[in-house]
Image (cartoon, rainbow, N blue to C red; front, side, top):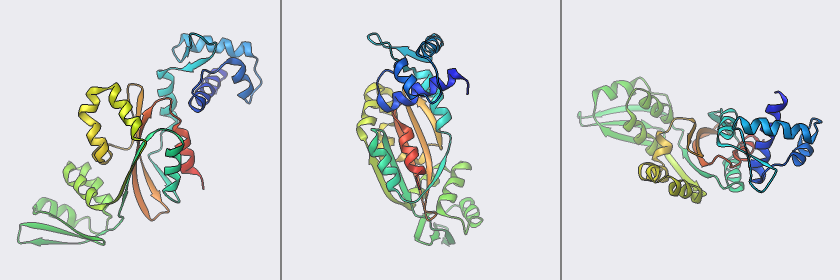
Length: 260
């Protein structure tokens, strides 16, 4: 990266950690490369003119703009799945920063057989139990070709081919644990955006949004939403949704996931 990019990224990482304007002198002491305060102030001015930084009225320090924070998180929150040893790694990260977090832990059992009950019901036998649905010849044919796959794999296939409702029902059947952390951050988003709250707040709180949302990053004003998958000790699967202000330190959550 060039000097300007290094300075901008450092301003952002320091700001999301401290939530205070970053001065040129402070940044000079935090940068690994040798650079004068005057040079940093020069880049501060250029970055402010470009809309990447803002200057506080009563301070010479700078804070990152919504534009620069969105670009930063697009670079940092690219991964759609992580492998971890235990769920405590996620929970610890969520507790350290006031980010809304919810996750669903799923049964990883496989489809082992099917039964057509008098053309009224289709019984899908999984290793952990029976999933019963109204009989449909098309669904029977699809499921017949999926014997041996996990319920989560089948749920994703259902969504991909347009059977979204069936995919959601199957995930609900496979759900073993649902947890929510830092609900106050979600309420702040609701207060700032009543239209979003009317449409999606209940869906997020119930876990429906987590089921239906695609993995990846999205933005809503000065908030972000990040969904990803977890493979826990290569034995269990989970889906996770993080939501919060752009200036929250999502890096802490991700760093905890990557700790061995």
